[in-house]
Image 1 (cartoon, rainbow, N blue to C red):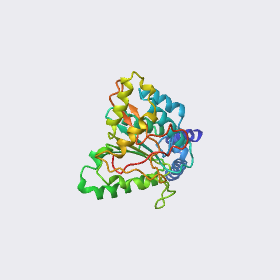
Image 2 (spheres, rainbow, N blue to C red; image 1 turned 90 degrees about the horizontal axis):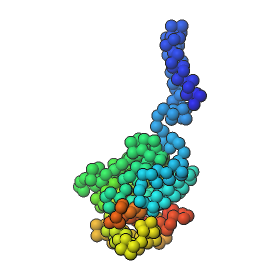
Image 3 (cartoon, rainbow, N blue to C red; image 1 turned 120 degrees about the horizontal axis):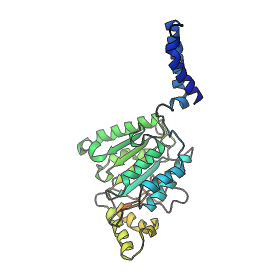
Image 4 (cartoon, rainbow, N blue to C red; image 1 turned 90 degrees about the vertical axis):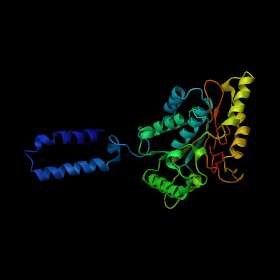
Length: 302
């Protein structure tokens, strides 16, 4: 901060000394000062957005944001808070953070991803390091699937090369053309490097309406029995979610082998407010997210 003030002070005083200093010498001096300023990362990041969070992620601030902005979502708050806090605080994660948010439109999937982005980058969704893809907008034509896959892989690789803490949000996954998700899968696994690039600090968020019907039945069962929505736990959703995830007629999803990799790090469920007419369902849910947040399986198309 002191160095920044010194640089700014020198720039402000420059017009006052320009008559007393030979122009070329003054220009070279100012160029040297500016070069030093730009090459000093901490100082540069005071005035421009930089890769990685500008401020350390605060679990308390994140929890406050979730409590004040994401209403009626006790399960989602818990999973997002624990998964994101643990991931950001880990200097050497083994794989990217991958969150899969499923449920009806209006259950808070996009809003949850917005809160996540804002707690990592001050620019939030407008940050240069946050990339939003909408299936029907960015990948509309099935005939271009090969081109889309090549472009998507190049985009992910290029942006993670420039910033390891890049965030990629994919909306309307239930409308994604079959096979396109295969282009993303390699980046989600336990690789130290792929073609010289590490993706272990990146964040992938997938939003989908798939699977919500079965979760609605679970929520309605609680409502009909007179139980409060806050009584619903992740374990109550797991059987229905497993069925909806792996047996969706519009899905090419296949369960991962029991000993195979589990690319999804977390799957926060949301309940539609105020009536339990729909929820945001995990794919599949984590077992209370107590220790290793690597449970879950990822579908080729959901």
